[in-house]
Every structure is written in structure tokens, then in C-alpha cells.
Length: 386
Ligand code: GLU
Picture (cartoon, rainbow, N blue to C red):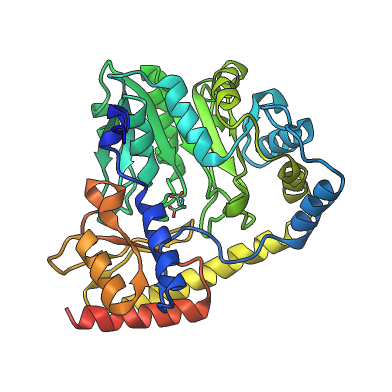
């Protein structure tokens, strides 16, 4: 068999997806696993969205669409982004594409070998892989548990070199659930403008915020022209399996990224796109109910974790992740492995998210109250035994 490309050789598979694959395999073998691993809502997609998709299939809407996405969806995304996010865009600034694909294509479209990309440590697992696959270098800015993992703009500024091409932001954050304060986002915007650096802003958890409000960096003066905003439907409407999202950027950037889309997936699945219009423009009650339910689960999980010896956790303001710190001398990889093998509870080791994630693990609480109680009970028992 041929060797994998040099580009790929030292890139690990996604830590989050690898654990989720392992959990599926264990479950298929009859092992009773409580999974806090994958970041995906356990709810089903609201029925108005599903029905719209079925209708499209029945109507024969089963062919390629424009690589940019159907016009109605580009308009719906643009309108939503103007009214809710205050991003000064029109449909011409929208490319319909899966969120992860948008991140991957943005890296390929803008990074050259030698370029540096600044990102927060810890950060979601695939940013580093996308940066490195494009030949560029990730430059991590350490953040602290005691400071709610909020990036310090002065550290960010100090990390800038003539090679810095891009800053990646992700608020609310995966894996910490942290929401960047408005002042921090404004300070980062000023630094980006002053140093002429582009920003890739991953806002996939924008609707799952319990305290405070979401701020899109592209809405700030002078930022639209240097920002690729990426978001989608997966988390907001429990549509992870639909693989549907978007990138919002100046037309020239949409043109560049779309070039990669035409050479890779061609377009998003056709019959899901009218359903995405329904998701954005249709009734929002089920979405609001889901967010309320996530908050209840967060509070429950935090309560239960506070009773576990050896764990400390701060209160995340968004997404559906907890990122507890543990006080046992063991790597997070080892802890996650033992927890899975001995207690049948799946979590993601903190080290998967960058060096500052060591000593932590990620819990996705987007699962039922019953599973949260049972899983955290097993976790308590496991921690007591260490
Ligand atoms: N973003 C989710 C997670 O971190 C889904 C898996 C992935 O895309 O990495 O679990």
C-alpha cells in the first residue's frame, strides 16, 4: 500500500470523532456506555424542518444546486445574519457549506506554508489539523481555568509576527463552553485591524447562550472586510447529521472559498436546503425549548460535579460542554481511557484540545437528564476509587 502523503502523516484523526466511533462500536457490542463524548444535541430535528425535507424529496428536488447554495437559503442566512448578528452582508456574501468544510476550505484558501495562525489554547480539535494540512503553523495562546479560559488580548498581540496571517475565534467555545466578553472581542478586533490580520470566527454555538449575548466580530467597524464568519444549523436545530452550514465573507473571499467547494463537494445536499430555509424562517419555539433544556442540564451537571471529590469546574455561559479540572496525577488521555474501560463513561481528554487542556476533560451534556445522573454517578464512583 502507498504511504500517506507527508502532509497527512503526522496529523492525528479527530479526537472527538475517534471517541464517538469507539463509543458506537462498544454500544454495538452491547456495552452499556454513557456517552458524554460527542458534541451533538440528543433531540430530533424539529418536525417542520423534517417535513420540508421530505416534501423536497417527493417533489424531485434531488439534483445538484448552485455550488453557492440555493438563492432562497443564501437570502435567509443573509437576513438572519443582518438582523440577529448585525453583520453587514447580503446573499452575495453567503456560501452554503457544511461548517467543518467551511473551516477546512478557509484554511486551504488562505494559508501558505510558513504562515502562522493564532488560536486559543484549548481550542476545538480540528483547527490545528486544518492549519497544518494547509502547511501553516498553529500558534497557541494559553488561557487559564481561573480566568474562565478567556483569551488575553495582550498575549495575543505579543504573539503576532510578520508571518501571522489569521486569528481563529470560537465563541461560545468548544471545549470550555466559555463566551468571550464583548470587551475582549472588541480588543481583538482592534488588534486585527492594526496589524492587518484576517479572522476566522467559528460561531456554531451562537444560539446556545445562557448568560450574556452573542457578539459577531464581523459586526464591529472595520471587521466585515477581514472576517470569515462560519456558522450553521447543526447545534441550533439539532441537525448534526444534515451537515449544513455557511460561511459569510466579502464577495471576493466567497469566490475564493467557493473555488474549493466546486472542486470538492460541488454543493450541499439539495433537498436539505429548502428545509434549512424553514429552519431559519419558520417557528423557533422548539429551538428555544432546547436551549432552556440545555441550561437545566448544565445546572444539574454542575450540581452533581460539585459533589465529586477531586473535580473542579467553572460555570460555562454557553454551548453544551463542561470542562472540569481533575486533581489526580494522570494524563487526561489515560483518565479518559480508564473511565471508559472501568466505568463505561465516555469523555474527551482535555489534551485533545491543546497543551492547556491537559489536566481537564470535556463533558458534553447534550444528553438526557437520566444519562447525566447515571454517568456522573459512575464518574463519582470512579474518582473515589482513584
Ligand atoms: N464539534 C463536535 C465535537 O467537538 C462534533 C465533533 C467534531 O466535529 O469534532 O464533539
